[in-house]
Length: 257
Image 1: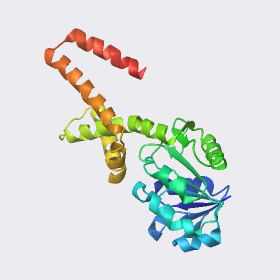
Image 2: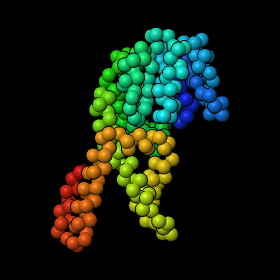
Image 3: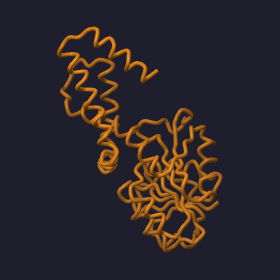
Image 4: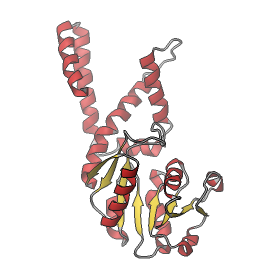
């Protein structure tokens, strides 16, 4: 299959490496420095060059705030049969875009960002495939993700947004609060250092991504849950309620068993 990758960042390079030995792959990237380590793939710098390559699948790996703009830039140079695909962690406006773009599409969300995941061993990681869209496109990504031994979940766009609000909204908000209360520690403990590693990784992400995750309409409900639990914990601590703390910890442990 002839596959075009949009963007040569971490995920664009990952998909290029993954696909280029079994497929004919081209990468579209305007910054030549980002393609220094791209090999076994055709390098493109302008959308007009796409027409001659004539891809059958386009995988959009640009940063979240440019996803739809990147699609719009290349659509005029694609054949009508070309499947367009995104791997965005936030699907806001994508469903509406796909329904009006006139091209078959598939949408997935690899739940393994390059910040924390070991891209060489993804056996314990998860990925989401949106059930709406082109059947053949979904089969392609199912086979691809299965070859990486990923756990594959299938959700609608609506279900995906609910999952992201929970699985990303809660840890993102909790980590931001941790960082907001941070003071320098000369002798940090192991738990503290692990939290710091997570915080540094989170804040290395694009600001737009963090904002969109937290602006998910379902995220405020998850933050309210955090606030409620903090109030319960604060009340137990202030009262020095040993029995209450014991019962609280017992209940919480059940959540992570």
